[in-house]
Figure 1 (cartoon, rainbow, N blue to C red):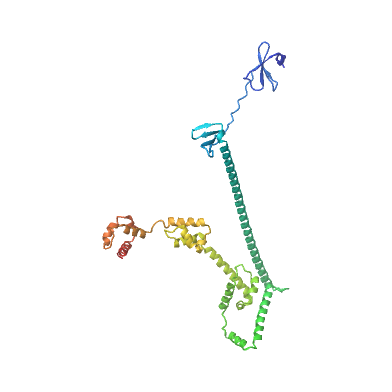
Figure 2: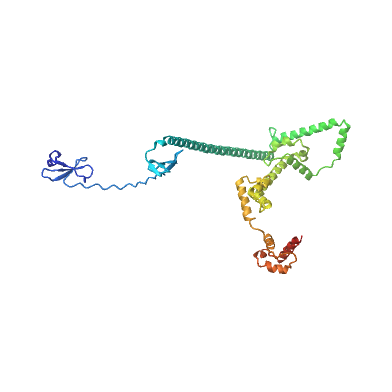
Length: 413
């Protein structure tokens, strides 16, 4: 550092134009120089100012809304400005004061209590609304979880049923394969058990009949049985299927599970033992196809509801009347959402019943035309009616004349 620039030997001068951190000194001869107190730098040249900082964009603060509150029991208003200032306004004298008059001390306390009570009520209302929203959310979550559990349970049942059917089919294939190769079973199969059960049932019936032969009534019964004509193969099959239908056999039923319930019915023994399982499976397959076709051909709930609208709704009918009158109709119940049903009803009334039919328009024309009265001839009436557009809504000339004559006949009654 130049010893000529030592601060202690020179005068310190204040200069507001200097950048931050710089101070100005003068030598004994009056020459200025500058020193930076932060960096220790000195210079004979005037320090260059720092580049100006870009002005920060500040969003204007939203002004609070000015509020006015009526002070209870007085004609004064308590006013809170948007800047947060408070003053009192006398509506009678139309004057404002900053200081609260002594007469307003008790009314202001009452106003404060009212504000606090209102605030508590608002807070309580918000808490109740929050609790209600939370409860609705929990209910919705619980409902969703229950539906998911039900769907999972149904899916599990369906998978289990498919596995059982697949297992049953595998067992059948294994049995057929064993028969083809002429293998001898080392233990009793499902078919053997069922055959033995049937043989036991037939033996039991024979024993019962043998024991009853000693009585005249039993002899008569045997004679009656012998008189019965033998059934054809088609009749036996029809009774076999009738038995399955009466027992409400499901399309997914398994022969081994249903066999003990069917074997005691005489109609089950009308078909040969070696064909019973095949006929049972055929019945289930045909029933499954029939159910599937019924579901495919079944109308959608919306279409069923529209059929009800077409057949029952009149132009003067209101939704409440329609709902009350047909609420027990299966077509009404087919659609579950009430708002959707009401919307379809109003749409039907607006677009399908909003306009009168051509015949109704033509009859309105006859009623509106005062010159149409008993005794007027058709050719004279036609000249009058042709001037109105409603005359041409009925396209058939014959229908126009017939409706005209029917109208005159009704007028003459």
